[in-house]
Length: 274
Image (tube, rainbow, N blue to C red; front, side):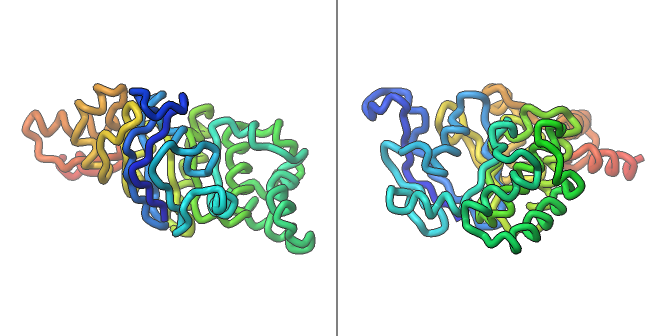
């Protein structure tokens, strides 16, 4: 779905200056997959997201989305294929009500009004916000606001959805709501998901993980493969899930137990051992 080759970007516009924001990025993201781009603040994650939707222009290298190369000729076609959910949902609200906000993108695409209402209802229901269509977005909780933002994007039928630190401003209940919705989208595989985050818990259910550090790809692979490099992750300010920490500690003490990414998996295995 997405191919990036030899990508370099520097905010200073000086290609000869050392310390590029993104340096020699090469990656492939498969259609229908859930890929997590993981890294601490300043690693280049959000810069990469802006490059993917054409808000920034690379100094060198290529970005290809669904067979289209990112350039002036294709940028608007590519943006039609990609929806992005930012960390602050208030920055994405346009309408005076939930219904108006979900309908905004459809109006821009000149969808007939008689068809529009059915689409709004469908995607409001999909994110569990069908009982809030007449509510003002400002009166919703953080998790509800993000769900409305996601509904507005889903209604546009994007091929790719980017979640750029989409849960970083939410309380635990809001994080749980959004993560549950991402899990549903992941299982349906109707959209390619890219989660850009520094939250290690996002990694557990991903299909593939790319770790950025100081603008370079430090490592990439399956979640369990990434977590085997716990010292490297901790050295750049990241961590591994609590369940895996406990699992590793038990193995060090001689207890035979497989690696577990979730507390539920770990609990089940400990009960079996008991």
